[in-house]
Amino acid sequence: TAQYIIDGTGGLTITAALQRSIHNISGEPAENRLLWAENLLEAKPEGLVGKESAEVVLFTGCVSALYPMAYGILQDLVEILQVAEVDFTTLGPEEWCCGYPLLSAGLPVPELIAHNLDRVEALDAKTLVTTCPSCYHMWKHRYPSGSFRILHSTEFLAELVEAGRVQLRPLTSVYIALINSERGSLPSLTARSNCILPELWLAHGAVHHRWDRRPDNNRS
Image (cartoon, rainbow, N blue to C red):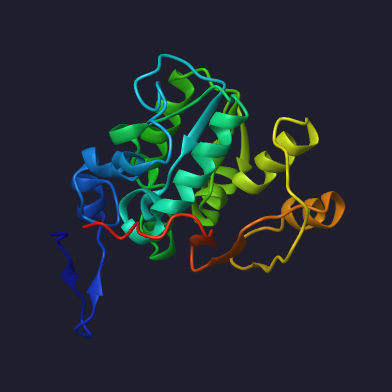
């Protein structure tokens, strides 16, 4: 169970001590960062963790990787990356929280930033992709510039579509609202490509989208 410090008002506050010892917002062991990959529709892709290098690093974020109700975000993206034959990997248990919760609380995050940046640079990646708007904001605006691009998953998917690596079905209905994130390529892609996409909304630092083909992801 995650440890908290009770503030002066009796509320619970995530502390820097939590981040330094566990390195995520859930209090889960680092090894649990890949539990979301256990029930992919296809076999777990080789090289999801442990590669020496990769073209793309998928920065999973704490919410999508560690909360079962959000596992589908990464599962669906990974299945698309597999179909598009993208050379990608994750940091696995080596990924630490991006630092957004601590930064929002006015706490320092240099240790988290330095660790994550070092791990991504070591993979010689050309692109970092994340589904989380908070992680995207941190990498784009708070981390030092690295030797790789930083894209939200919607921007990366737009590139795959434009390159013909992902085929889209005819549009039926789409609801899109971008909150707490910079507007990217998805709205223009939707209008231009006459495609079908999941319902998607970004709120309070988490990304949620709904598909109709994965009924039960709420495993404990």
